[in-house]
Image (cartoon, rainbow, N blue to C red; front, top):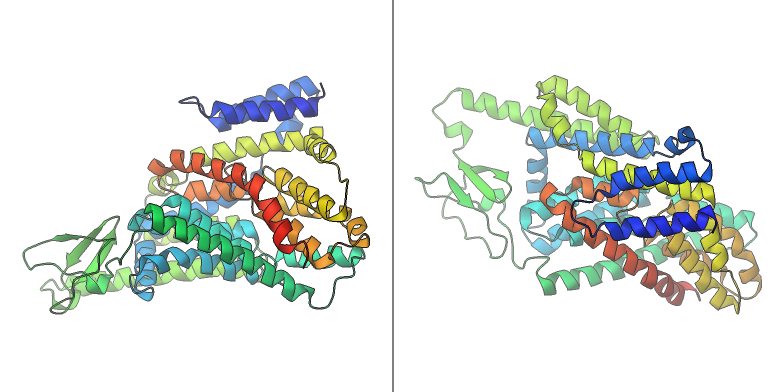
Amino acid sequence: MTMATLSIIVLAALLAATLIPGFDLGLGALSAAFLLGLAAGVPTNDVTAFFPADFFVLIVGVTALFAVAQLNGTLDWLLDLLLRLAGGRLVLIALAPFAIGAVLTAAGTLPAAATAIVSPIALGFAARYRISPMIAAVLGVTGIISGLLSPLAVYGVTARELGTKLGLGLPGSAPVTFLAGGLLAGLVVCAGCLAVGRLNGGIPRGRAFTPAESTAPPSSTTTPSSTTSAPTPASGPAPASDATAGTRTATADPTDSADPAAPAAGAQRSGARAFTLLCMAAVVILSVGFDMNVGYLGLTAALILQLAFRLPLGAIVSRIPWNVVLLIGGLLTYVGLMQHLGAFKQISELLGVTGSPLLSLLVLCYVAGITSFAASSIAVFATVMPLLPPLVAAGVSPVGGVLALALASVLVDLNPLGITGGLILGAAEPSARSRLFRQLLIYGLISIVVAPVLTWSAFGWW
C-alpha cells in the first residue's frame, strides 16, 4: 500500500470519527498529519508548512472586524437597515446575502474574501430571524458562485486565459456565456433552496418587525419581535429601538428625553456607526479594487476601531472562533500533506478519461468535483483544464466543457473541509456550529455525487 492510498484511508477514518461524541476533527487531523508524515519520511517542518497561515489571518481578521461592529451596535443597525429595505419580508431577507455575494464576485472579489464578507451577514440574519443557518449559508455561497465566471472574476479570467493558451477556440461571446451559465446555475440552486426552506420552515413565513414598526405600550420596556406574522400597524409615532437577538427594546426618542445627555449619547452612537461603516467600506474597497489582503485589512481596521472606542480587547478576542481556526487549520494541513504524497493525483488516475468524448467530459467533471471537495477549487480547475483539448477536438463544445468543469469544481465548495466552510462556521452562532458542521458535511458529500452530473448534463452541449 502506498502512502497516498494510506492518506486517503486515514482521511475517511477521520471523517467517520466525527460521529464519536467529543472527537475534535482539527486536533485529529493535525495528529494524523504528524504521524503520517513520520511514516512517509516527510520532515515535521515540511508538515507544519502545510498549515494555512493565509486562512488563519483571513478568518481572524474578518471576524475581529465584525466583532467590533457587533460590540458597538453597528452590525445590528446594519441588519435593521437591510430589514427595512426588504420591507420586513423574510424571503427577501434570506435572499440579500445571495445578491451581495453575486455582486462582489462579479466585480472581481476573490471567493474567500467575498465569503468572509457575506458570511457574517447571512448567519447574522439566520440568528436574528430564525432562518436556518444551513439555508442562509447555501444562499450566500451560491450567490458568490453565481458571479465567479464574470469577465472580471478569477474563474472567468482563468477560463479565458487557459482557453487561449490551450487553443480551445473559444468564441468572442464566451465571457458573456460563462457569466450567464454561472448565474443560471446559481439561480437554480437558489430557487431549490428557497423551496426547501419554505416547505420545512427553514425560512419562516410572513414578515419581521422593522424598527419603525416596533411599538410598545407606555408602561412596557420590551416587545418580543415576531418572525412569523405581519406587524401590527402603529397607532402613533413609533419609538426608536435597538435590536437584539429576538428582542426589540423600545426607548424614548432622545430628542424628547428630559436627560440633556441623551442627544449627545445618540450623536456619539451615530458617529461610532459612521466610522465603523467607513472602516468596513475601506476594507471592501481596498480588497476588491486594489487586491489587498482582506484578512490583514480586517485586523488593521479592528485595531483602529478598538483603540478609537476603547473597546475591551478580551471581548473582541473571545468572539474569534478559535475552534473553527483549529478545525480548518488541521484539516488543510492534512490535505496539504495528502497533495504532497500524490493522493489526489492517484484519485484522478483511478478515474482515467476513457470512452466517448461526452462520457469523458463527465468523468472529468467528477474528477474536478471530488478533488475540489478538500482542495483549492481554482487549482483543481486549472489542473483539469489541460485534459479538455482532446475532448474538444473530438467534438465536445469548448464553452460547454469549460462551464461544466468550472461549475463542477465550485459547487462542492460548501463543505466544512475548506476555507468556505470554515468561514461559514466561524460566522455561525456557537450553539449552532456542531449541527451546521454535520449539515455542511452531508451537503458537500451529496454535491460530489450530484453536482458533476448536473453541470455536465446542463452545460456540456453549450
